[in-house]
Amino acid sequence: MRTAEGQGAGVAPHPGQKLAPHTVPAITFRALARARGGATAVGLLRGGQLSKRMLMVRALRQAADGRPEEGAAEAAYRGLVELNRRDRAAWREVMLHPYLDEGLTRALTALERGLPTDLRWLEQLSANPGREGWHRVHAICDGKTLDLRLADRGPFREAHGHQLAEPLTAEQAQKWTQALRAAWAVLVQRHPWHAETIAAGLTTLVPLLPNPDGTEVSSAARRAFGAVAASLPDDPVLLALTLVHEFLHVQLGALLDLLPLHGPPTDARYHAPWRPDRRPAGALLQGTYAHLGVTDFWRTELASGAGGERPRREYNTWRAHTDAAADTLLESGELLPAGTRFVTELREAVRRRPVPAGVPRGGADLIRDLRRLGLRAGDTVLVHSALSTVGLVSNGADTVVRALSDVLGPSGTLVVYTPTPDDSHPGTPASAPDTTPGFGVGVLAGTVRTWPAALRSAHPRSSFTALGAQAEYITSDHSPDCSLGEESPLGRLEKLDARVLLMGVDFEACTAFHLAEYRIPSRLTGPHEGAEMLLDSSPFAVVGAAYEATGAVRSGRVGHAPCRLFDLADAVAYAVGQLTDRASGE
Image (cartoon, rainbow, N blue to C red):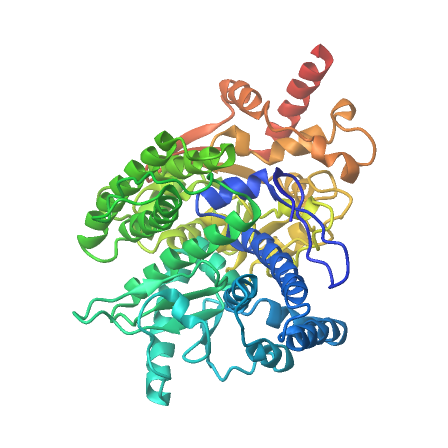
């Protein structure tokens, strides 16, 4: 499989077709490194796993040639080809079985060593997809769904390296179901980025026994994409944390299948702050990445005001450990260039996500700040935000959305930008507007997108989501040939005399300025949809600063977040003049 960090994403073909190369788009690579990949990244990693496993099945067929296992390997291969032709969904279920990789690896290793191997498991898996007899868990919170299988039987689960629980009784399965539903509520309500990722990629949980001393254990196996293993803690917060921690291991393993981040193993060993033994570079990278998730989890728990003093203590500990381990990796000399970029982004995520401090703000505090800033009942407002800059807020993004809605009132409308930029790459299926998460626009936008009664425009790349009186008008009939121009929600917002609120972000995030670009012929060549990739936000900071200097921008704070509030139409008109002058001067 040929891989490279760049643009585009390969799509796993049918058996017998030529395999397309997989690449990791730069925006997805950065998001993965910061534990913010979401469903977009999981889809890319899943495609890589499909291709990898197809190659392994072919390799097994070749390795068994002339061996006693030849008939079984050929039957399994032919069965998969036929299943793919007959039922593509069932074929995908087989190919994405969490322990197919582990089983194929063991079989190939045995054949390479001249040892016999039993392939009946592969024939059975191919003939009976989805019939493992595993318990199913279905959890729903705030309209978001988690579907899991409790893998309490079957081969290769010992790859997780801990003592497996016995097959679950009905009572034990119900206890797991209740615990997972409670953990899912924690993730959805306080950790939406991680909830999105886990819902997209985690398919299987293997029940483990705790350690003999009663301490809980958990594990992710390198060749078990989609699965984690864990004993059952009493606290749903700790189970939620386990899912975050272990699934980051799963993600990194799948990324390493596409894009090597470090060189071949060496004899060197490095200090891992969370372990007494020194670790090779690859193991330290795995631990550091998973503990980025732990740090992020406790930072958000602290910001939510939940859990007393424990979140601050845990956050301070894991932030220091993860930062130190990232430094060790960057100084090791064992990272490849892509690995250096990955760990640098990881470290930036640790250092730049602000430390919550003080007493959590409630909705009344935010309402007061928003009204002082100048937001009014009946306003239509396009909000761009970095929620972390607000500081501690009880119940996080939900409270901020409610505060905005309360200030705007029943005649007002809240609008956010919810793009899916990876859909612009050739070979990638178009997103489903109702379900595809926005990418790279923050927690607040993601929360509005899934809010009851919110409406989303149908553009496959540059959608907007609106909540309130004008939501249908703003989001309807978003022309596929006009991402951010006159026939987009930006054009509708201008007609409504909408306002723009920048909450903790600068003018680079001001999507409304793209509407100005559509009005400058020299900045677009050819039809808008073909030329939209030429849109360039790099001048927006300069244009925004000049506009602010005119006195047209109201400034203030919402919580700790520096905010700017201004009229969209006036800002767009000003930007047209500024960008035209810049274009004529080039």
